[in-house]
Image (cartoon, rainbow, N blue to C red):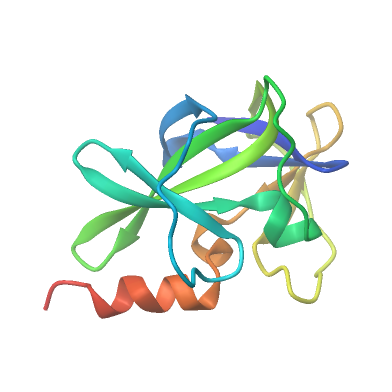
Length: 148
């Protein structure tokens, strides 16, 4: 299996490719009034508005830099009987790496979304658990609009 490797500041991270719906260049987003922390806007995508989380804002308290390699990663997350889409803005989205042997990561307070390190990949990127990544307020919004 593969993972998409990217940067959040100086931190090498990776996301399982099986969760990725599409990789898009950075683009203008529709603003959201009073959005939860880290949520920077809505992405019109395949007939729906998808919330986008800036990983640099979430982890470092600063905006992702407007690099040529800054990308929107649209991921699919299970929700009830269906799926929900979330966009993740990340820097230096440049590489695919193999999901192989891992080493445990250190638990970081306030970042339950950081998982194990990929032992066989350059820079030993740390896996991101997208299910743990959403700000609490955004996750709650998804639960409120879930079909009954």
